[in-house]
Length: 49
Image (tube, rainbow, N blue to C red; front, side, top):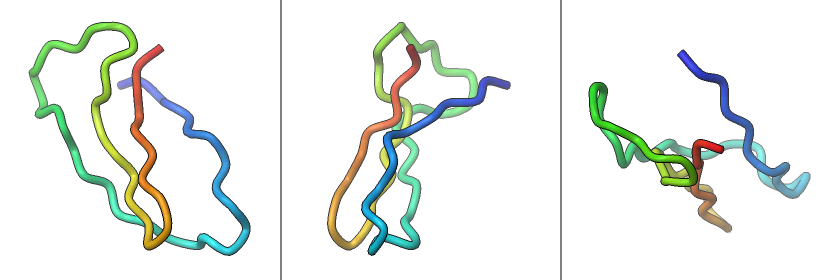
């Protein structure tokens, strides 16, 4: 398991959904997006660094 951090969202954003791009067992390279956090205002990709 690896903990990843995303940039802080604006205070007005209180919730969002995670859309997984990679499945369990998929290979992942450095700086490749593994998921996207989608809110009603913005989408932020989660990358492994």
